[in-house]
Length: 206
Image 1 (spheres, rainbow, N blue to C red):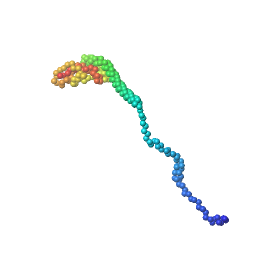
Image 2: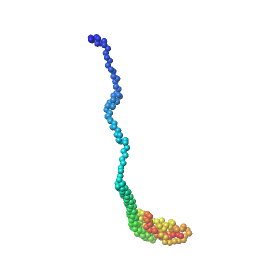
Image 3: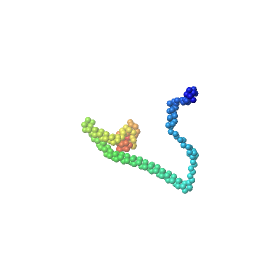
Image 4: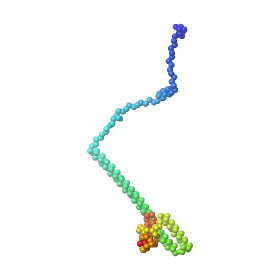
C-alpha cells in the first residue's frame, strides 16, 4: 500500500480519559493508606448462659455453717472490744482532767486564806492612808493571778440563796428584802469552772 493510500484511511480515535480531580485522588489515597482491620468471628459460646451448679455434701454444709458462725462471733467480739476501748479512753481522759483540776484546786485553796488576811489588814487603815493604797494594790494583784488560773468570786450579796454555792450561817427576818435573799457576806466564796473551791459564808433573810 502506498503512502497516499495510508493517508486516505480513517485513523482510529484514542480513548479519552476524564482527568481525576484532586479530591478524588485524596480519597483514594486515604482508602489505600487506611489499615485493614479484620472483624473477629463471633464466639457463639459467649452468648450462651452457663449454669454452674455445685453439689455439697452434708459435711461440707456443716463446715460452712461453722465457719460462718466463727466469723460472726469474731466480728461481734471485735465490736465489743472496740466499744470497751472507746469507753476506757474517755474514762481515762476524764480521770486525767479531774486529777489535774483537783491538784490545781488543792494548790489554790491556801492562797484564799492569804487573800482573807489581806482584806482584814486592809480594813485597819484609813482610806487616805498611803499604806492602805499599797495593800489594795497587793490584793488586786492576787485577784488578777487567781483570775488567770480560772478562779472567780461567787456572787452572793443581794443574790438569791443557792445551797450549791452559799453556806448560810445566819438567818434574819427582814420585810424589806425578798425571801431567801442573801443580805450579808461574812466570807467570800470562790469557784473554778464548775468546781466550788470555797462556799460563800452568808446571812440569809427568811
